[in-house]
Length: 191
Image 1: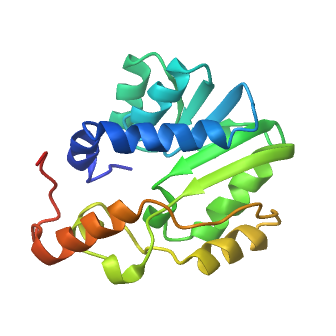
Image 2: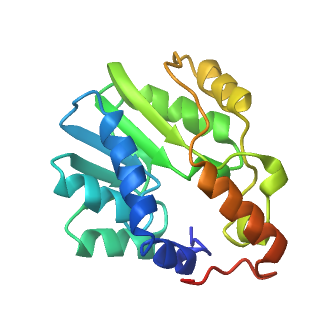
Image 3: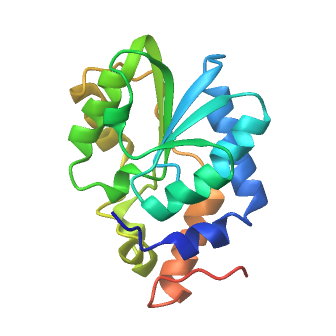
């Protein structure tokens, strides 16, 4: 599988405050687990940040070029979830990935199967379908989520939701502005 939005990932790698915010969320939700799986790691921006802060990270990335980038950074990178044993992963996180997957329910069930008993799953996705823009289309998003929609998805996979909330109100405003004033191509620029 080849991902069409790598250039946007590279631009977002420069969003230092946003990436620090995501890395902090990943660490805060780890339950002090020493190991994590980054499902849909992309070019590894967050995986590298949390690894620097002491979390042993295994990345799962379907895009071969992005897996090569991860490997060049010294991060273990697997092509799919099947490479992980069932019931053994203490912590899995996924940041801005489920919206790219047509059958998100099947993937969440696969993630649940990989968790060890008492393991944690942390999912961060874009919210509000009304914000769907050319950028979403360019990078292959199928949807944006409402909180109730995501909670139902997780519960149908047999997991218990501990907390579900909207965050990043500045991101809401930035995305709305992008939708109204941004590029028709879906490209991001560093400004």
